[in-house]
Length: 321
Ligand code: ADP
Ligand code: MG
Image 1 (cartoon, rainbow, N blue to C red):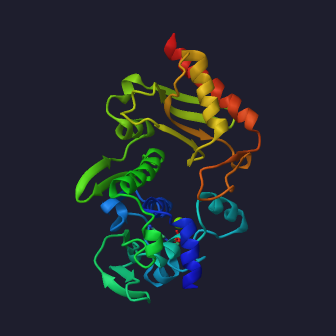
Image 2: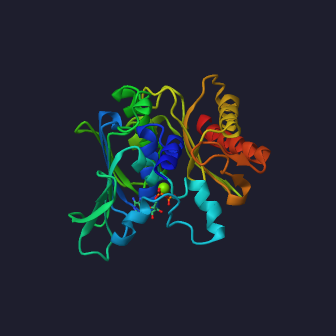
Image 3: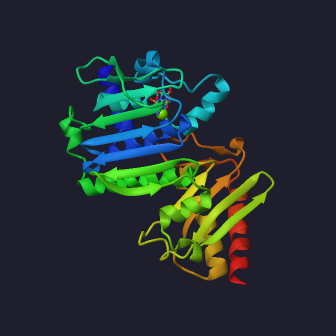
């Protein structure tokens, strides 16, 4: 099973950033309102994520790191939802098969935290210090598979991939505070806020002046967020964040709808920067194309395209006039 885990890990754990993505999803699933991330050497030497979520019971720690063990499916109905959010009980096991992992957790029913780690092959539980919540330390990614390790890029490149996933999660979860340290330096700190303030915190202090805020709903479709000229949102060339039902997506229907509105109203040829959250009934979208990927498939892509373009045209026209 260890070999199978390692093969599965190749799918799930491409680089430090993929570990970050999975661990952040777990922390947010557990209801965290505070997530502290520490990275060393772009995450290659250490990824340390500490959340204040519900925690894992001591006797379920070893289950959490077992393949196909998930606490998140209680019915067949839920299966569809869980598949949409990520791997089903594979992430921790996969990560643990290609790194040293320590898992420390405590629920509010426990008198103290319990820690487990895979340093000597087996998982061993031991009492530990810690508040309610979960801390996962992932050290020396791919230490046991040098062929994979050599595909990792420089610290700076791996760190920027990590930060990208943190940014995606932070934008969509303003109810949760985030802090990020890299090599013992604080590089980002986002306090709990609302979605507007979170966008401003993440993309830069001068953003709100130039941003065009969007807030539209038609029937059960809604879109909120902001759109702005491409040069405003810091120096980033690709500040383009679109979410469907809280999930980050890269989708042609969505991006084309956004660009169409921008080009029509403002006659700009360059692509705008944007952070947009689009919500629609779950049956209107299939997100199971691949759980690790950012693709979606709409039941009625024409209607979604039209909704996005029309909503943004209205917001842009109001601001332009
Ligand atoms: P999945 O998220 O698909 O269930 P994972 O391998 O990511 O699979 O996690 C396995 C299980 O470990 C989860 O179902 C959950 O019960 C538990 N778990 C993992 N991370 C956390 C966390 N940060 N807080 C609470 N529980 C967690
Ligand atoms: Mg998970």
